[in-house]
Length: 248
Image (cartoon, one colour):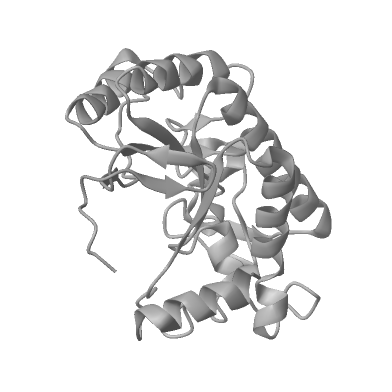
């Protein structure tokens, strides 16, 4: 097979990117009031006008307690207009736009958000100096629904790709990591139980959006602590473990 240039178009789910260059999700710090600003739009426009195939907006929370701090955007009716303006501006350049969506879980600053943080198991938070509470069944049902509602909003706003945040000890990652998930119910124990939330969210989002957008997931290659998520032995190992977590 002939080698392919990074400048060539490449399919990603139902869309075709104009090249293989992707701007990864890195928090931009341009939403001081939790709203899309012109500064945030200009940030992604600069990348798009530079010729990139896909730029990723980070970080878009699915719920108020899912922000790492209060300045971040929560996707919903009051932020949809700004998100739509940004998507329209980026797509006008020929680039595609992705939204990294997630729930920060124990990485959220509950004191800043004014809402208690959630995790797989109860634990202290060095960010807020408060206890992070263990998510209940009702919480997990609500959060899954929030992912679906967020996906629906971003599709309506004109986004091309949804990146599900399942890394860095955020909520879903806290369920995957044995050291952070000490539950004895169906959400804990062996990998099948610890991966239940990741699979539930991925399946619900995919069923909601169908082929309207591409859906990807961000997972940790190595959390860097004992009992964390580790997928970094080889590319094949990453692929097989990701399949085990999320299903085929």
